[in-house]
Length: 156
Image (cartoon, rainbow, N blue to C red; front, side, top):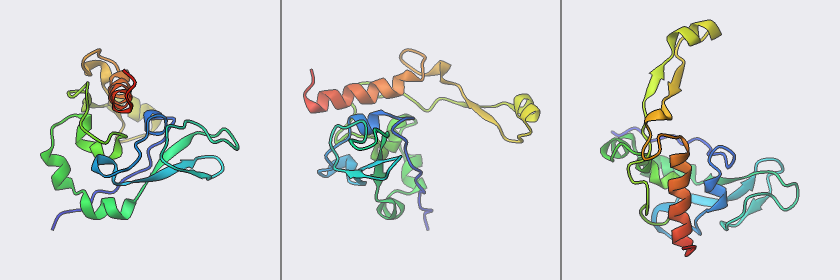
């Protein structure tokens, strides 16, 4: 029996593209997205290109149907996909395939044992985004999703 994948919240602040360029959820890859929700006051919004709450100006986050994800997306499925950020495409705000940056992501985690020891942590890992392509920056993830979504919206 396959283990179910357990999703965690994706912050609009950490991955702002999710709120800025969210999909309208009409099937396709965004079928797990339900709405936008303000992290500060909890107000819900439809899946539209919004960035902040109209009431409190708090950041908006995508909300997902976690039960549906748990029953549909398994570790086996994830492991069978290419080793890029697009293996997690159900959590990215695109209806179709990426238009740019298809090889972005999946940079290595480096065990930082000495720093971890100093901080009192046994298993501290640091993400090495200095090997991310094409620009060797963590920004490649955000930019590839942003450009793909902008093209999807017709902003060319």
